[in-house]
Length: 209
Ligand code: PRP
Ligand code: URA
Image 1 (cartoon, rainbow, N blue to C red):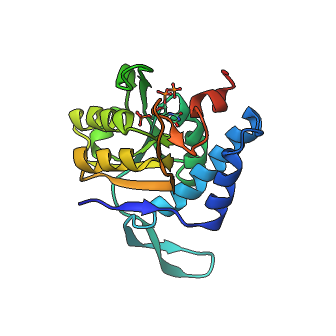
Image 2 (cartoon, protein in one colour):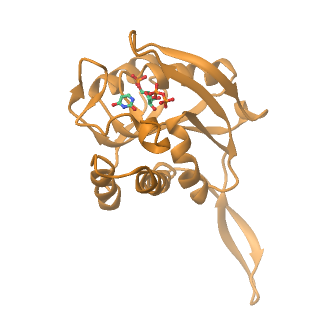
């Protein structure tokens, strides 16, 4: 069974407290989502493997550490996942970026796919799927299935706010995927929104409502 990691870092908690406020406009919301993603990326990459390599300093030869494992990719779930990409890249700038377009049907809450473009060598990469919201879990589970169908084996999922229902769904459907969560909220409401949550993440990032 994969890990479910709840981020306890005070800076992450503080910033999540700010993006929940309805008084925060798109500009500040975007900035803080990006900062949270950067901090979450730092925490979610703690266990990447290192190897020893020999290098020359201006003084002598020495042994230093270098990332050992697979190359990395970041895959945002459109639209709201886009808000986390810059923050992720500020920590792992060499990562390739894929895009998966899904929206949640407002009536059925089922994910509807409309786009998928991934790095050619995606199946050889460690892939970080990002989306600020894990509500029913339908969108993230579908996105991860799309990656698995393309042969991707190493997947981590990062979300800023999760509902217990979504975490359970992900654990059932993708028990091999580690989940990193900024805050675990109480529940979903009758419209499938996370309570207390932060509203519609895509609309808040892009100012569409
Ligand atoms: C939001 C969010 C997730 C999804 C979560 O996207 O960014 O992708 O809902 O809900 P779920 O866990 O119940 O599937 P939305 O469908 O609103 O699309 P958008 O990002 O384009 O606004
Ligand atoms: N998608 C969002 O953007 N917010 C929620 O609370 C649930 C799904």
